[in-house]
Image (tube, rainbow, N blue to C red):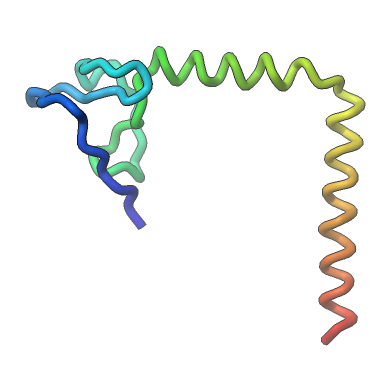
Length: 90
């Protein structure tokens, strides 16, 4: 199912796309490809996308590895319990 198309608040020329993150119009070369998008380009420019990833990784680095491993184990135990519950119900 294709993604919906957002309409930029300003008119943009051919070969240019509007980045909704930084609110600027930039050439197509400044956008990464995304085959699922209606125009085959990511909705935000490479610069904004990189800053988003940097923020995500910094936030993730704040959590100790042991806590992330424990959270992952709890998550998989919940999934396993749900599967076992569904198998015994049938």
